[in-house]
Image (cartoon, rainbow, N blue to C red; front, side):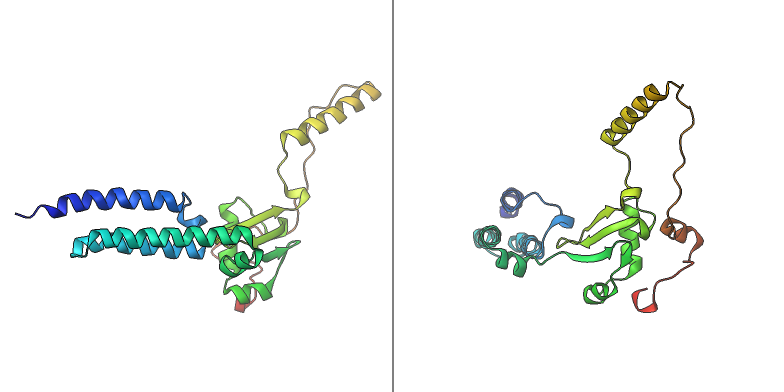
Length: 207
């Protein structure tokens, strides 16, 4: 009985692990187009020895793919033009709470898809977003409006210090009440899911 398939299987796992370790630790969602192509190619190659192909040729081709990827990444570090050509540039989706329709058409993206990504980041209103960009790896980067940003410990400490100084100046007891922040305008995109519809739907060509 031929037991070659046993050591081939072990070698495939070890070689595949080594190749992917050399290629990098990024997850699929963080990969550029070139990295995704290389990873798919390696995955397809690793199964070839099971189909009777030469295992050493398969590993050799895998190494060439990985080294090609490393060369491409090195060139991107050295040249902005190469990086723009291979990786691409970020695209603006929202600017000061306003959806940039022309970029949606170029990217073949809908407002509903953007809202899904915003909800995943805990953003409930498009009007709360100062900047939103689509990054080359497919992720959406978001910067909130100043009034929509969560309070940091630094902000809280500065506010507390100002309140303490004001209390010392007035010589009064601090109030236990907290000011209520007025809600900023805009439709809640989480409530849109609950109501199964939008009160102010985007234009039809962006839905």
